[in-house]
Length: 201
Length: 201
Image (cartoon, rainbow over all chains, first blue to last red; front, side, top):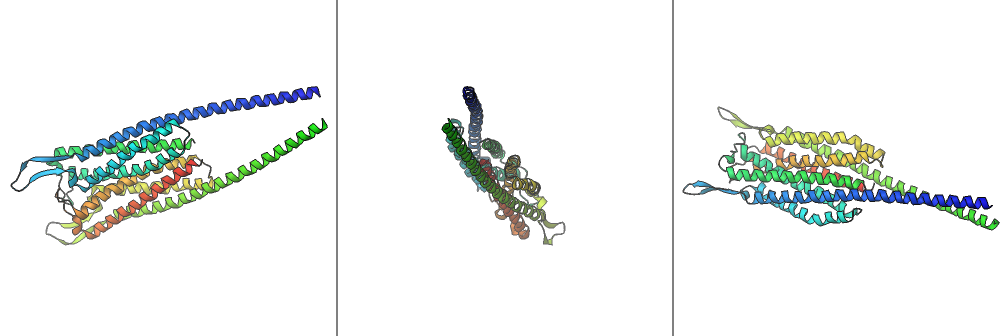
């Protein structure tokens, strides 16, 4: 009976030890996962700030694009400004919204760094990011179509290239379109990163 | 000793019972989750097929858009075709790619229905869907900018509205743009659905 009791205690002990080891292993795994998530969250924040900067640059470049040609006739002066093209007006509005959203989403991204396990903020970010990437893409693509037309014209529709006269104006709006495409690329990367991070939960 | 042994057996029994109940509850929960995931996967398949149909309609409508005006001069006949506008050519190519991708992704969606717990196919779908939504949006937005120009012209840039002559052609390309925006809306919904489904894993 003595022996049996002793062996029972032995089994209990070893069971407790095993449990302890398992708990330790689990904690280590959790810590690793949390570190990984925190790394992703920091990368997310950096990408987000870069995208906001690119979007702001695109907005300002397009919004301040105007040129007055140095020659004029008796009746009018030749000048071009971004609001002569409805697409550019849309571009400025859409990219302002994108910039605003990206700046406002920074606190949520910081919450994701502080609490790597939080699922709510990450899900909110991926949903809003998806909508934002569509808005930014539509602004970039529609302006690209018009800038292409301004550079090359279209002989079939009898639309002339205006960039032969307004070179400075065209360079500015081309720069804005390039900046907006950089924003789109960063945002796509951000959505893919969030989707991969969400999978680990 | 007899009593103590009996009570030990009692505890063991009740422990086993509890474990059995927990297993049953767990199985019920798993079955509910699997049913939920399967429902999402079926909805995903329906949305995917609808989006493919809309993309195909957009491609065909744009690709077959041409009009020859009933009057002509001695030197040439007035005709418009989709490949007079480079943006429309891009539209046809991009929407063909989107249609092809959506059709090819149907088997993966069916795999998600058959094996609701499979994580790989769902992740693959959400990543590719995000890229496709950007491609479809850029095609839709750039064509929308050109179609707007064709309808209204732009007096500042001296681009005339060609839709006053080519009414039929303009109606076709407008229809194609509307269909492409329907594709974009369905794709956005698909990505959001996939993100929500991925969270449950």
